[in-house]
Length: 249
Image (cartoon, rainbow, N blue to C red; front, side, top):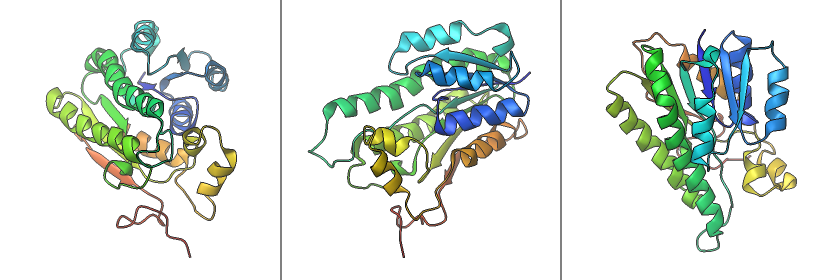
């Protein structure tokens, strides 16, 4: 039975991907900080389909403990979806909260690194066709006011993905998936819970939805074993590459 290990599975891309893979017969390891949401996700599927593990990407030991405790039915791991991450703050430099910067670095960079290192032996055990899919962002190359450290962390994700694939020497497939404007809890988190700002961000726009990203993750994970797709950038039609901010009529 193929297994996908997902970080950030309590909402957005991670939750949608967990539901899609579970519905298609994969065993799913759903991880995140919010245990109640993980319980709800697990309850949607037959017993034994979804294994949940509460972990914090800022806590390396919690990652190690979650991987070490995987039941036999959830190992080896066929696909690692390094999805957990966040943006915090919208102010440009220097009007920033250094604590927000630290959290983004610890989560988006260190959390991804440590999860990859912990899960890697299980991916190696799965053998040919195993995949790592890292969630980046178009913010890694399109700068905008207030993007500062968030964009920097996603630039790291891009370059780490490239180097990870080089180091693994073709044994494991690595993809950097870079979405543009997507409607999830992203802006709600970024604005520290400002629901009005969250809705205003998407007013008049048909954004990427979590289910759209889940479909792409499914496509990537199920390509023939000799195929590696190194990079995918996906945006709403209205978000054109030359101008990453939304153009409105």
